[in-house]
Image 1 (spheres, rainbow over the protein chains, first blue to last red):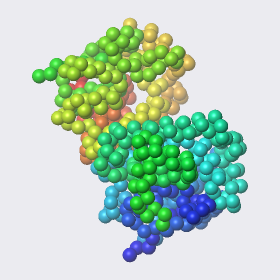
Image 2: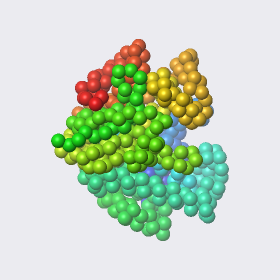
Image 3: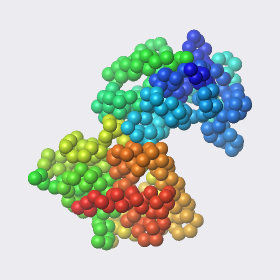
Image 4: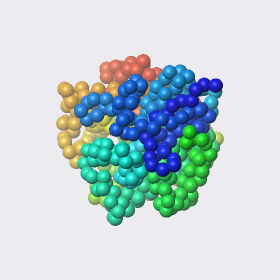
Length: 247
Length: 247
């Protein structure tokens, strides 16, 4: 029996620590493939130091040109591999564990890489809601760094990003519009999966983010979202939750 | 025997009138499916009037909020359908002629719709080269309208868009970079098609534009491009040209 894969993730308050859509994509991939894994929690102010220490690759550049480190990162004790970036992790797992269920059926890897880009672009208008909800849920020790780094990036205070009132209403309208676009993709596919009746990493991308939203917008708002578009998001969440994603 | 489908397209000078990448996508689709078609040539200043007259749908809005009409449009005498927009045409043909070879295999329609968006976004940095080459090739009667509408949209004269020298060199660098991204998609797919060994509309999108480039950049420059990335673009052009796309 191989040792569990380590998933580095950012913790939130409450009984369930997992929070981020991109980490849920990796959790869902690991669980769908039946690969054992365990979580190691790193607050965002510690990511750079911790990732440098284990030799993880940066995923981009800071405005000053120096390396920028983000999670998710996995560390696979069975191979020694350390892999950054959710899509690269999916490709690594698909290639390294070929006897597990495929997430790129019928040569779909290139197409799903463009689906991933389109999805991540489309979700941007929801980020004001996401950042506001994340701020309310991360650990108190994580808040000062989160405030400073987010406010520098977006050029306003956390409180100004999505204040209650017409601005937030507009953000919820954007959210419903984007979920409508995803619903349109499912309608095109003529089935309950993005690829018709065949499960793929495209469903993991959507499902991972839906799982994220159910936590970020927990309560009345999630109850409402889960009924949008014929109840698609409620059904998708049930599907995701069938897998042991919280290991 | 059903009557040939009519394809509305914009003509260029020279023995072969076809010019535009989006029209080549429709030509390639029709030819791949073995559907008979014939071209009807419309210069861009006449598109709005001609398309309104046949009852075609607009594909967008002008800055003043009025309807904007573009080609390709097809008119199918067998069904009476008139369909605008290359992707919508592909969906129409797939649905209406189910016994012809599929272009959306394995439930790939939704994924390929995102591939189409990513491709059309990625190609934008090549537009200065494309517009400059189109300008040199359209019919003299088409030039005044093309100049006026293009210059209004891009905010500079046609001669300023991609003048010979460092600016054009940069545009060619952008072109090579984008073709490198496409080459990366093919490498991911582990085959000569975007979906591995399976032909799909994703190959039609790439092949249609490659056929367009071979005409727009005919001569020495195309000779050079066809050798980039291990000769992939030369091979792709040969593949496209096996089909009777010029009907």
